Amino acid sequence: MSSLIDEIASTYDDTPYMSYAFHQTAPEHLRAVAHLFGLDTPVPGRARVLELGCAAGGNLIPFAVRYPDAEVVGIDISSVQIAAGQRVIDAMKLENMRLIHGSITEIGEDLGQFDYVIGHGVYSWVPSDVREAVLRVCRERLTPRGVALISYNTYPGWKAKEIVRDAMLLRGGTRSTPEEKLSYARGMVNFLHDMSTEGSVLKRVMDDNIDTIRHGDTHYLMHEFMELCNAPCYFRDFLAAAQMHELAYLAEANVSLMFASNYGSRIAEPLLRECAGQQQVLEQLLDFLSNRTFRQTLLVHAARSNDVRYGLDHQRIASLHVAGSFYPTNAKQSHWRHAKHGDLDTASEVERQVVRALNRAWPSTVPVAQLLIREDATALSGDDCQVVLKLVEQMIISNQLRFRREPLVCASEPSNYPCAIAGVRALFNETLNHQAPIGLFNQWHENLPRLGAVEAALLPLLDGTRSVDALVKAMQDLAANGQLRFKHEDSFLESPEAIAIAAEDHTGRVLQWMAQTALLEQTA
Image (cartoon, rainbow, N blue to C red; front, top):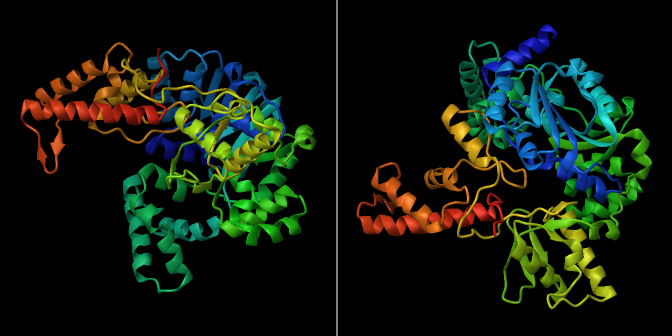
Protein backbone atom coordinates (compact mmCIF):
# COMPACT_ATOMS: atom_id res chain seq x y z
CA MET A 1 0.00 0.00 0.00
CA SER A 2 1.13 3.55 -0.65
CA SER A 3 2.16 5.78 2.23
CA LEU A 4 -1.05 7.83 1.87
CA ILE A 5 -3.22 4.72 2.00
CA ASP A 6 -1.23 3.60 5.05
CA GLU A 7 -1.97 6.95 6.70
CA ILE A 8 -5.68 6.64 5.89
CA ALA A 9 -5.69 3.10 7.29
CA SER A 10 -4.18 4.34 10.54
CA THR A 11 -6.94 6.94 10.96
CA TYR A 12 -9.55 4.17 10.81
CA ASP A 13 -7.48 2.03 13.18
CA ASP A 14 -7.32 4.94 15.62
CA THR A 15 -11.00 5.91 15.24
CA PRO A 16 -12.97 2.92 13.92
CA TYR A 17 -16.18 3.72 12.09
CA MET A 18 -19.36 2.35 13.62
CA SER A 19 -20.38 -0.28 11.10
CA TYR A 20 -24.11 -0.03 10.34
CA ALA A 21 -26.62 -1.51 7.92
CA PHE A 22 -27.62 1.00 5.22
CA HIS A 23 -31.01 -0.04 3.88
CA GLN A 24 -30.60 1.42 0.39
CA THR A 25 -27.48 -0.68 -0.22
CA ALA A 26 -29.24 -4.01 0.40
CA PRO A 27 -28.87 -6.25 -2.67
CA GLU A 28 -32.62 -6.94 -2.56
CA HIS A 29 -33.23 -3.21 -2.96
CA LEU A 30 -30.69 -2.88 -5.77
CA ARG A 31 -32.41 -5.76 -7.56
CA ALA A 32 -35.83 -4.12 -7.15
CA VAL A 33 -34.60 -0.74 -8.43
CA ALA A 34 -33.00 -2.39 -11.46
CA HIS A 35 -36.28 -4.20 -12.16
CA LEU A 36 -38.21 -0.94 -11.90
CA PHE A 37 -36.09 0.56 -14.67
CA GLY A 38 -36.14 -2.42 -17.00
CA LEU A 39 -33.23 -4.68 -15.96
CA ASP A 40 -33.29 -8.16 -14.48
CA THR A 41 -30.54 -9.05 -12.02
CA PRO A 42 -29.48 -12.16 -10.05
CA VAL A 43 -31.72 -13.35 -7.22
CA PRO A 44 -30.21 -12.63 -3.79
CA GLY A 45 -30.55 -16.14 -2.36
CA ARG A 46 -27.39 -17.45 -4.06
CA ALA A 47 -25.76 -14.16 -5.04
CA ARG A 48 -22.12 -13.26 -4.55
CA VAL A 49 -21.82 -9.86 -2.85
CA LEU A 50 -18.67 -7.75 -2.43
CA GLU A 51 -18.38 -4.63 -0.29
CA LEU A 52 -15.48 -2.24 -0.80
CA GLY A 53 -14.50 -0.42 2.39
CA CYS A 54 -16.64 -2.70 4.55
CA ALA A 55 -15.35 -1.47 7.95
CA ALA A 56 -16.30 -4.21 10.46
CA GLY A 57 -18.89 -5.72 8.13
CA GLY A 58 -22.01 -4.26 9.70
CA ASN A 59 -23.55 -3.59 6.30
CA LEU A 60 -22.91 -7.16 5.11
CA ILE A 61 -23.83 -9.19 8.18
CA PRO A 62 -27.61 -8.66 7.83
CA PHE A 63 -27.54 -9.93 4.24
CA ALA A 64 -25.35 -12.92 5.18
CA VAL A 65 -27.83 -13.79 7.94
CA ARG A 66 -30.84 -13.54 5.61
CA TYR A 67 -29.28 -15.64 2.85
CA PRO A 68 -27.07 -18.45 4.18
CA ASP A 69 -26.59 -19.79 0.63
CA ALA A 70 -25.22 -16.47 -0.63
CA GLU A 71 -21.47 -15.71 -0.57
CA VAL A 72 -20.46 -12.45 1.08
CA VAL A 73 -17.01 -10.81 1.00
CA GLY A 74 -15.82 -7.52 2.46
CA ILE A 75 -12.46 -5.73 2.12
CA ASP A 76 -11.07 -2.85 4.14
CA ILE A 77 -7.67 -1.26 4.79
CA SER A 78 -8.20 -1.03 8.57
CA SER A 79 -6.80 -4.10 10.31
CA VAL A 80 -8.54 -3.06 13.54
CA GLN A 81 -11.97 -2.95 11.89
CA ILE A 82 -11.43 -6.20 9.99
CA ALA A 83 -10.34 -7.99 13.17
CA ALA A 84 -13.35 -6.69 15.11
CA GLY A 85 -15.72 -7.76 12.35
CA GLN A 86 -14.17 -11.20 11.98
CA ARG A 87 -14.60 -11.84 15.71
CA VAL A 88 -18.32 -11.11 15.36
CA ILE A 89 -18.64 -13.28 12.22
CA ASP A 90 -16.94 -16.18 14.01
CA ALA A 91 -19.13 -15.74 17.10
CA MET A 92 -22.26 -15.68 14.93
CA LYS A 93 -21.02 -18.74 12.97
CA LEU A 94 -21.60 -17.03 9.62
CA GLU A 95 -19.90 -19.53 7.33
CA ASN A 96 -20.95 -17.69 4.16
CA MET A 97 -19.09 -14.46 4.96
CA ARG A 98 -15.45 -13.44 5.16
CA LEU A 99 -13.52 -10.20 5.56
CA ILE A 100 -10.21 -9.35 3.90
CA HIS A 101 -7.64 -6.88 5.15
CA GLY A 102 -6.24 -5.10 2.13
CA SER A 103 -6.48 -2.26 -0.35
CA ILE A 104 -9.08 -1.99 -3.10
CA THR A 105 -6.18 -1.39 -5.48
CA GLU A 106 -4.99 -4.96 -4.86
CA ILE A 107 -8.24 -6.69 -5.87
CA GLY A 108 -7.67 -8.99 -8.83
CA GLU A 109 -9.35 -11.80 -10.70
CA ASP A 110 -8.51 -14.36 -7.98
CA LEU A 111 -11.46 -12.98 -5.99
CA GLY A 112 -13.88 -14.01 -8.73
CA GLN A 113 -16.94 -12.13 -9.91
CA PHE A 114 -19.84 -10.74 -7.93
CA ASP A 115 -23.52 -10.10 -8.65
CA TYR A 116 -23.59 -7.04 -6.42
CA VAL A 117 -20.70 -4.71 -5.60
CA ILE A 118 -21.24 -2.12 -2.86
CA GLY A 119 -18.98 0.86 -2.24
CA HIS A 120 -20.68 2.93 0.46
CA GLY A 121 -18.67 5.77 1.97
CA VAL A 122 -15.45 5.06 0.04
CA TYR A 123 -15.22 6.84 -3.31
CA SER A 124 -14.94 10.44 -2.05
CA TRP A 125 -12.70 9.61 0.88
CA VAL A 126 -9.73 8.01 -0.88
CA PRO A 127 -6.96 9.25 -3.21
CA SER A 128 -7.44 9.33 -6.97
CA ASP A 129 -5.73 5.99 -7.65
CA VAL A 130 -8.13 4.25 -5.26
CA ARG A 131 -11.12 5.97 -6.86
CA GLU A 132 -9.93 4.59 -10.18
CA ALA A 133 -9.57 1.18 -8.57
CA VAL A 134 -13.16 1.30 -7.25
CA LEU A 135 -14.47 1.74 -10.80
CA ARG A 136 -12.02 -0.77 -12.23
CA VAL A 137 -13.17 -3.39 -9.72
CA CYS A 138 -16.80 -2.67 -10.62
CA ARG A 139 -16.02 -3.26 -14.29
CA GLU A 140 -13.83 -6.35 -13.82
CA ARG A 141 -15.48 -8.09 -10.87
CA LEU A 142 -19.17 -7.43 -11.70
CA THR A 143 -21.06 -10.25 -13.41
CA PRO A 144 -22.71 -9.36 -16.74
CA ARG A 145 -26.15 -8.92 -15.13
CA GLY A 146 -24.81 -7.44 -11.90
CA VAL A 147 -25.32 -4.04 -10.24
CA ALA A 148 -22.82 -1.83 -8.39
CA LEU A 149 -23.67 0.90 -5.89
CA ILE A 150 -21.19 3.70 -5.28
CA SER A 151 -21.92 6.51 -2.84
CA TYR A 152 -20.04 9.81 -2.87
CA ASN A 153 -20.17 13.43 -1.79
CA THR A 154 -21.51 15.75 -4.46
CA TYR A 155 -21.39 19.32 -5.58
CA PRO A 156 -22.94 21.82 -5.40
CA GLY A 157 -23.97 21.01 -1.81
CA TRP A 158 -20.46 20.17 -0.66
CA LYS A 159 -19.13 23.55 -1.81
CA ALA A 160 -20.47 25.02 1.42
CA LYS A 161 -19.43 22.05 3.56
CA GLU A 162 -15.86 22.47 2.33
CA ILE A 163 -15.74 25.77 4.20
CA VAL A 164 -16.56 23.87 7.39
CA ARG A 165 -14.01 21.15 6.62
CA ASP A 166 -11.27 23.67 5.82
CA ALA A 167 -11.94 25.56 9.06
CA MET A 168 -11.83 22.37 11.10
CA LEU A 169 -8.58 21.22 9.50
CA LEU A 170 -7.01 24.66 9.93
CA ARG A 171 -7.24 24.52 13.71
CA GLY A 172 -7.48 20.82 14.49
CA GLY A 173 -5.63 19.06 11.69
CA THR A 174 -2.15 19.24 13.21
CA ARG A 175 -3.09 18.14 16.74
CA SER A 176 -1.82 14.85 18.12
CA THR A 177 -4.78 12.64 19.00
CA PRO A 178 -8.22 12.24 17.36
CA GLU A 179 -9.88 13.60 20.49
CA GLU A 180 -7.65 16.69 20.51
CA LYS A 181 -8.10 17.25 16.78
CA LEU A 182 -11.87 17.16 17.03
CA SER A 183 -11.97 19.32 20.15
CA TYR A 184 -9.95 22.10 18.49
CA ALA A 185 -11.89 21.74 15.24
CA ARG A 186 -15.23 22.08 17.01
CA GLY A 187 -13.93 25.14 18.79
CA MET A 188 -13.12 26.73 15.43
CA VAL A 189 -16.61 26.08 14.06
CA ASN A 190 -18.22 27.37 17.25
CA PHE A 191 -16.15 30.55 16.98
CA LEU A 192 -17.05 31.13 13.33
CA HIS A 193 -20.70 30.43 14.04
CA ASP A 194 -20.88 32.89 16.91
CA MET A 195 -18.75 35.63 15.34
CA SER A 196 -19.81 35.62 11.67
CA THR A 197 -21.90 38.53 10.45
CA GLU A 198 -25.65 38.04 10.28
CA GLY A 199 -26.80 37.62 6.70
CA SER A 200 -23.35 36.68 5.41
CA VAL A 201 -22.59 33.54 3.42
CA LEU A 202 -20.35 32.32 6.25
CA LYS A 203 -23.16 32.74 8.79
CA ARG A 204 -25.55 30.72 6.62
CA VAL A 205 -23.01 27.94 6.17
CA MET A 206 -22.31 27.78 9.89
CA ASP A 207 -26.01 27.82 10.78
CA ASP A 208 -26.62 24.91 8.40
CA ASN A 209 -23.86 22.76 9.90
CA ILE A 210 -23.46 23.77 13.54
CA ASP A 211 -25.75 21.08 15.00
CA THR A 212 -23.94 18.34 13.09
CA ILE A 213 -20.54 19.54 14.28
CA ARG A 214 -21.62 20.03 17.88
CA HIS A 215 -23.54 16.78 18.29
CA GLY A 216 -22.24 14.39 15.62
CA ASP A 217 -20.53 11.16 16.58
CA THR A 218 -16.75 11.33 16.80
CA HIS A 219 -16.20 8.62 14.18
CA TYR A 220 -18.48 10.37 11.68
CA LEU A 221 -16.96 13.83 12.12
CA MET A 222 -13.38 12.59 12.00
CA HIS A 223 -13.86 10.70 8.75
CA GLU A 224 -16.36 13.01 7.04
CA PHE A 225 -14.81 16.40 7.82
CA MET A 226 -11.23 15.70 8.92
CA GLU A 227 -10.17 12.74 6.83
CA LEU A 228 -7.00 13.10 4.75
CA CYS A 229 -9.03 12.81 1.54
CA ASN A 230 -12.45 14.18 0.74
CA ALA A 231 -13.05 14.74 -2.96
CA PRO A 232 -16.67 15.65 -3.82
CA CYS A 233 -17.62 15.82 -7.47
CA TYR A 234 -20.52 16.73 -9.70
CA PHE A 235 -22.86 13.94 -10.74
CA ARG A 236 -21.92 14.42 -14.40
CA ASP A 237 -18.21 14.09 -13.61
CA PHE A 238 -18.78 10.87 -11.67
CA LEU A 239 -20.68 9.43 -14.63
CA ALA A 240 -17.88 10.50 -16.99
CA ALA A 241 -15.36 8.65 -14.82
CA ALA A 242 -17.62 5.58 -14.76
CA GLN A 243 -17.99 5.72 -18.54
CA MET A 244 -14.19 5.57 -18.91
CA HIS A 245 -14.47 2.16 -17.21
CA GLU A 246 -17.28 0.98 -19.48
CA LEU A 247 -19.90 1.44 -16.77
CA ALA A 248 -23.28 3.11 -17.31
CA TYR A 249 -25.77 4.90 -15.11
CA LEU A 250 -28.80 2.91 -14.00
CA ALA A 251 -30.48 4.88 -11.21
CA GLU A 252 -30.20 6.35 -7.74
CA ALA A 253 -30.73 4.04 -4.78
CA ASN A 254 -33.31 6.56 -3.57
CA VAL A 255 -35.42 6.66 -6.72
CA SER A 256 -37.52 9.60 -5.51
CA LEU A 257 -34.51 11.87 -6.18
CA MET A 258 -34.76 11.08 -9.89
CA PHE A 259 -38.23 12.51 -10.54
CA ALA A 260 -38.85 16.20 -11.22
CA SER A 261 -42.50 15.77 -10.21
CA ASN A 262 -41.42 15.63 -6.56
CA TYR A 263 -40.33 19.26 -6.80
CA GLY A 264 -43.72 20.64 -7.88
CA SER A 265 -45.08 21.56 -11.30
CA ARG A 266 -43.54 25.04 -11.25
CA ILE A 267 -40.08 23.44 -11.28
CA ALA A 268 -40.89 20.19 -13.06
CA GLU A 269 -42.51 21.54 -16.21
CA PRO A 270 -39.67 23.81 -17.42
CA LEU A 271 -37.05 21.24 -16.41
CA LEU A 272 -38.72 18.45 -18.35
CA ARG A 273 -39.00 20.70 -21.40
CA GLU A 274 -35.33 21.67 -21.09
CA CYS A 275 -34.04 18.11 -20.66
CA ALA A 276 -36.20 16.47 -23.33
CA GLY A 277 -35.89 12.96 -21.94
CA GLN A 278 -32.21 13.20 -20.95
CA GLN A 279 -32.34 11.65 -17.48
CA GLN A 280 -28.77 12.44 -16.49
CA VAL A 281 -29.09 16.11 -17.48
CA LEU A 282 -32.33 16.34 -15.50
CA GLU A 283 -30.75 14.91 -12.38
CA GLN A 284 -27.73 17.19 -12.59
CA LEU A 285 -30.08 20.19 -12.70
CA LEU A 286 -32.06 18.78 -9.78
CA ASP A 287 -28.80 18.53 -7.82
CA PHE A 288 -28.40 22.29 -8.23
CA LEU A 289 -31.98 23.01 -7.22
CA SER A 290 -31.78 20.83 -4.12
CA ASN A 291 -28.16 21.73 -3.27
CA ARG A 292 -27.48 18.01 -3.05
CA THR A 293 -24.53 16.86 -0.95
CA PHE A 294 -24.60 13.08 -1.35
CA ARG A 295 -25.52 10.43 -3.91
CA GLN A 296 -25.85 6.64 -3.97
CA THR A 297 -25.57 5.79 -7.65
CA LEU A 298 -26.26 2.42 -9.27
CA LEU A 299 -24.04 1.37 -12.17
CA VAL A 300 -24.23 -1.49 -14.66
CA HIS A 301 -22.05 -2.63 -17.53
CA ALA A 302 -22.25 -0.21 -20.46
CA ALA A 303 -23.55 -3.01 -22.69
CA ARG A 304 -26.83 -2.91 -20.73
CA SER A 305 -27.41 0.84 -20.95
CA ASN A 306 -29.74 0.62 -23.95
CA ASP A 307 -32.10 -1.62 -21.97
CA VAL A 308 -32.65 0.91 -19.16
CA ARG A 309 -36.13 2.48 -19.23
CA TYR A 310 -36.89 5.55 -17.10
CA GLY A 311 -40.59 5.62 -17.95
CA LEU A 312 -42.11 3.38 -15.28
CA ASP A 313 -43.88 0.35 -16.68
CA HIS A 314 -47.08 -0.79 -14.94
CA GLN A 315 -46.43 -4.41 -15.87
CA ARG A 316 -43.14 -4.34 -13.97
CA ILE A 317 -44.75 -2.49 -11.05
CA ALA A 318 -47.44 -5.19 -10.90
CA SER A 319 -44.76 -7.85 -10.25
CA LEU A 320 -43.32 -6.04 -7.20
CA HIS A 321 -43.93 -6.64 -3.50
CA VAL A 322 -44.50 -3.37 -1.63
CA ALA A 323 -44.78 -2.16 1.96
CA GLY A 324 -45.90 1.08 3.55
CA SER A 325 -47.51 2.46 6.68
CA PHE A 326 -49.94 5.39 6.80
CA TYR A 327 -52.39 6.87 9.27
CA PRO A 328 -55.64 8.63 8.30
CA THR A 329 -56.04 12.32 9.01
CA ASN A 330 -59.83 12.33 8.62
CA ALA A 331 -62.77 10.00 9.28
CA LYS A 332 -63.43 9.43 5.57
CA GLN A 333 -59.92 8.05 5.07
CA SER A 334 -59.55 10.30 2.04
CA HIS A 335 -56.29 11.75 3.31
CA TRP A 336 -53.37 9.88 4.86
CA ARG A 337 -49.99 10.77 6.29
CA HIS A 338 -46.73 8.88 5.96
CA ALA A 339 -44.44 9.16 8.99
CA LYS A 340 -41.49 10.48 6.95
CA HIS A 341 -42.53 11.21 3.38
CA GLY A 342 -45.53 13.47 3.26
CA ASP A 343 -49.25 13.14 2.64
CA LEU A 344 -51.35 10.94 0.37
CA ASP A 345 -54.81 11.64 -1.03
CA THR A 346 -57.12 8.72 -1.86
CA ALA A 347 -60.06 9.91 -3.91
CA SER A 348 -61.68 6.51 -4.49
CA GLU A 349 -62.57 3.42 -2.46
CA VAL A 350 -60.14 1.22 -4.42
CA GLU A 351 -57.31 3.59 -3.45
CA ARG A 352 -58.36 3.50 0.20
CA GLN A 353 -58.43 -0.29 -0.02
CA VAL A 354 -54.77 -0.25 -1.11
CA VAL A 355 -53.72 1.80 1.90
CA ARG A 356 -55.67 -0.40 4.31
CA ALA A 357 -54.05 -3.52 2.85
CA LEU A 358 -50.59 -2.01 3.26
CA ASN A 359 -51.32 -1.01 6.86
CA ARG A 360 -52.59 -4.49 7.75
CA ALA A 361 -49.44 -6.14 6.40
CA TRP A 362 -46.85 -3.67 7.68
CA PRO A 363 -43.91 -4.19 8.09
CA SER A 364 -44.29 -7.11 5.66
CA THR A 365 -44.76 -6.63 1.94
CA VAL A 366 -47.93 -7.10 -0.09
CA PRO A 367 -47.80 -8.36 -3.69
CA VAL A 368 -49.00 -5.58 -5.99
CA ALA A 369 -50.95 -8.32 -7.81
CA GLN A 370 -52.92 -8.83 -4.59
CA LEU A 371 -53.79 -5.13 -4.49
CA LEU A 372 -55.56 -5.64 -7.82
CA ILE A 373 -58.20 -7.78 -6.04
CA ARG A 374 -60.96 -6.30 -3.88
CA GLU A 375 -61.21 -6.99 -0.17
CA ASP A 376 -64.18 -9.29 -0.95
CA ALA A 377 -61.86 -11.30 -3.29
CA THR A 378 -63.52 -10.11 -6.50
CA ALA A 379 -61.37 -8.82 -9.34
CA LEU A 380 -61.07 -5.11 -10.01
CA SER A 381 -62.23 -3.71 -13.33
CA GLY A 382 -59.62 -2.75 -15.89
CA ASP A 383 -60.08 0.93 -15.07
CA ASP A 384 -59.75 0.31 -11.33
CA CYS A 385 -56.59 -1.74 -11.92
CA GLN A 386 -55.08 1.26 -13.66
CA VAL A 387 -56.09 3.47 -10.72
CA VAL A 388 -54.31 1.12 -8.30
CA LEU A 389 -51.17 0.83 -10.43
CA LYS A 390 -51.04 4.60 -10.87
CA LEU A 391 -51.36 5.02 -7.08
CA VAL A 392 -48.55 2.53 -6.42
CA GLU A 393 -46.38 4.32 -8.99
CA GLN A 394 -47.07 7.66 -7.30
CA MET A 395 -46.21 6.21 -3.89
CA ILE A 396 -42.92 4.76 -5.17
CA ILE A 397 -41.96 8.05 -6.80
CA SER A 398 -42.80 9.90 -3.56
CA ASN A 399 -40.66 7.49 -1.48
CA GLN A 400 -43.74 6.35 0.45
CA LEU A 401 -43.30 2.67 -0.41
CA ARG A 402 -40.53 0.17 0.10
CA PHE A 403 -40.41 -2.40 -2.67
CA ARG A 404 -38.83 -5.74 -3.44
CA ARG A 405 -38.89 -8.38 -6.17
CA GLU A 406 -39.41 -11.13 -3.58
CA PRO A 407 -41.78 -11.02 -0.58
CA LEU A 408 -40.54 -9.93 2.82
CA VAL A 409 -42.48 -11.58 5.65
CA CYS A 410 -42.21 -10.68 9.32
CA ALA A 411 -44.51 -10.36 12.32
CA SER A 412 -46.91 -7.41 12.23
CA GLU A 413 -47.97 -8.20 15.82
CA PRO A 414 -46.02 -10.01 18.56
CA SER A 415 -47.11 -13.63 18.91
CA ASN A 416 -47.55 -15.30 22.28
CA TYR A 417 -44.03 -16.73 21.87
CA PRO A 418 -42.18 -13.84 20.21
CA CYS A 419 -38.91 -14.53 18.41
CA ALA A 420 -36.35 -11.96 17.27
CA ILE A 421 -35.05 -12.36 13.72
CA ALA A 422 -32.10 -14.66 13.15
CA GLY A 423 -28.72 -13.29 14.07
CA VAL A 424 -29.82 -10.21 15.99
CA ARG A 425 -29.70 -11.84 19.43
CA ALA A 426 -26.26 -13.29 18.72
CA LEU A 427 -25.00 -9.96 17.42
CA PHE A 428 -26.44 -8.14 20.42
CA ASN A 429 -24.71 -10.48 22.87
CA GLU A 430 -21.42 -10.11 21.00
CA THR A 431 -21.58 -6.31 20.88
CA LEU A 432 -22.68 -6.19 24.52
CA ASN A 433 -19.84 -8.39 25.73
CA HIS A 434 -17.05 -7.11 23.50
CA GLN A 435 -18.29 -3.64 22.46
CA ALA A 436 -17.92 -4.55 18.79
CA PRO A 437 -18.48 -1.47 16.58
CA ILE A 438 -21.44 -3.01 14.72
CA GLY A 439 -25.06 -1.84 14.79
CA LEU A 440 -28.14 -4.03 15.18
CA PHE A 441 -30.44 -4.46 12.19
CA ASN A 442 -33.95 -5.43 11.17
CA GLN A 443 -35.38 -7.40 8.24
CA TRP A 444 -35.44 -4.29 6.05
CA HIS A 445 -31.64 -4.01 6.34
CA GLU A 446 -32.04 -0.91 8.51
CA ASN A 447 -29.84 0.08 11.41
CA LEU A 448 -31.75 0.06 14.71
CA PRO A 449 -31.54 2.91 17.21
CA ARG A 450 -29.74 2.32 20.47
CA LEU A 451 -31.87 0.08 22.66
CA GLY A 452 -33.34 1.31 25.93
CA ALA A 453 -33.10 -0.65 29.17
CA VAL A 454 -36.23 -2.75 28.68
CA GLU A 455 -35.47 -3.43 25.00
CA ALA A 456 -31.93 -4.53 25.91
CA ALA A 457 -33.24 -6.78 28.68
CA LEU A 458 -35.89 -8.40 26.46
CA LEU A 459 -33.94 -8.99 23.25
CA PRO A 460 -31.68 -11.85 24.51
CA LEU A 461 -34.81 -13.68 25.71
CA LEU A 462 -36.69 -13.57 22.41
CA ASP A 463 -35.79 -17.04 21.11
CA GLY A 464 -39.38 -18.19 20.60
CA THR A 465 -39.45 -20.46 23.68
CA ARG A 466 -40.82 -17.95 26.18
CA SER A 467 -44.42 -16.78 26.32
CA VAL A 468 -45.29 -13.13 26.77
CA ASP A 469 -46.30 -13.94 30.37
CA ALA A 470 -42.87 -15.50 30.97
CA LEU A 471 -41.19 -12.42 29.51
CA VAL A 472 -43.21 -10.16 31.80
CA LYS A 473 -42.17 -12.33 34.76
CA ALA A 474 -38.52 -12.07 33.67
CA MET A 475 -38.79 -8.27 33.67
CA GLN A 476 -40.31 -8.37 37.16
CA ASP A 477 -37.46 -10.58 38.37
CA LEU A 478 -34.86 -8.22 36.91
CA ALA A 479 -36.55 -5.32 38.71
CA ALA A 480 -36.66 -7.28 41.97
CA ASN A 481 -32.92 -7.97 41.66
CA GLY A 482 -32.15 -4.30 40.99
CA GLN A 483 -30.97 -4.98 37.43
CA LEU A 484 -33.87 -3.03 35.91
CA ARG A 485 -35.80 -0.09 37.32
CA PHE A 486 -39.18 1.24 36.27
CA LYS A 487 -40.00 4.89 36.68
CA HIS A 488 -43.28 6.77 36.96
CA GLU A 489 -42.98 10.52 36.46
CA ASP A 490 -39.91 11.43 38.55
CA SER A 491 -39.91 8.49 40.97
CA PHE A 492 -38.68 4.90 40.69
CA LEU A 493 -41.33 2.29 41.46
CA GLU A 494 -40.76 0.27 44.62
CA SER A 495 -43.89 -1.75 45.44
CA PRO A 496 -44.20 -5.25 43.88
CA GLU A 497 -47.70 -4.40 42.66
CA ALA A 498 -46.57 -1.26 40.84
CA ILE A 499 -43.55 -3.05 39.38
CA ALA A 500 -45.76 -5.89 38.11
CA ILE A 501 -48.05 -3.44 36.32
CA ALA A 502 -45.10 -1.53 34.87
CA ALA A 503 -43.37 -4.74 33.71
CA GLU A 504 -46.51 -5.85 31.85
CA ASP A 505 -47.03 -2.43 30.29
CA HIS A 506 -43.40 -1.94 29.22
CA THR A 507 -43.05 -5.48 27.87
CA GLY A 508 -46.19 -5.13 25.77
CA ARG A 509 -45.17 -1.78 24.35
CA VAL A 510 -41.62 -2.89 23.57
CA LEU A 511 -42.80 -6.06 21.82
CA GLN A 512 -45.25 -4.00 19.77
CA TRP A 513 -42.43 -1.61 18.82
CA MET A 514 -40.23 -4.54 17.84
CA ALA A 515 -42.97 -5.94 15.62
CA GLN A 516 -43.56 -2.61 13.90
CA THR A 517 -39.79 -2.21 13.48
CA ALA A 518 -39.49 -5.54 11.57
CA LEU A 519 -37.45 -7.09 14.36
CA LEU A 520 -39.69 -10.09 15.06
CA GLU A 521 -40.13 -13.19 12.96
CA GLN A 522 -43.54 -14.44 11.97
CA THR A 523 -44.22 -17.58 14.00
CA ALA A 524 -47.04 -20.10 13.96
